[in-house]
Length: 377
Image (cartoon, rainbow, N blue to C red):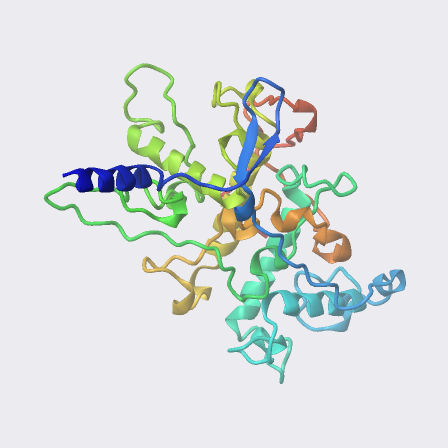
């Protein structure tokens, strides 16, 4: 009996401590003292910043002059406004970012998108997709600056290139497709809950919050306007989807809730950090990318690029961030590739009237309301 008690005295504390994270913690205060706005992370788990490829060669000012790409090459529909030299420079970088290797459709290189016998041809679906993604990249850099305004570079933000998501892969590693509905059983319908999944940081929340909240226009709410609310966007089931999305965002950026919210009052904008404004724009930027660029390609996607429900692989926060609050550590990628900044900024959604965070001065000023279901040009 004594031997069993001694064994229990060793095993029980070990089991109770099994969920604890040992090791050196890194604490960063991110808000006014006394507000609890701090980030706590395991030092050994801090993600490392991915290496960024150097430009293919130097882009000199004289290379920006000369004949335009649309006048030099056939069927240039997106980058026709830049010089032929800058076009070649951008194509060389794009190949390194998305399809490096041996120059075959299967293994990358120029032939991943082009027929080497007719470079102007659109016969390969990869070229059609690449054209749409270039439109998307230009639109992000010209329109969605409120999302990455804090990744400061000369007051303009770091911007994005194909490398931000692809990192040398034809398909970004972090992507999602709509989940297959689980049929009801005698035990009821779990609605995606109690199935530990990395998408929601292994919580018991619905493992697919993306289908409802990272495409379309559903509101993201956790609190109703009155007691015992029914039939609106803050039902219990939809609230759980919101919490699932928040877990994904926390994991995708490598931060905890207080990176954006003041835990004294999660909903109060005046108690929140300006990062909450960036996140608000980020969610709508992701919806714009998914709705107007990826899903808009429709039947262009082949069977090996769609999920079990037939929808294409789409983006979420992890696609760019990869566990870091600023993708690639805030490296100003766009400064070396001016062609990827769109010539004309489009409208962005208007912030809620109550959205005045602590660092209000850093918040971007919206210009107009946008219809995210409108097809991109």
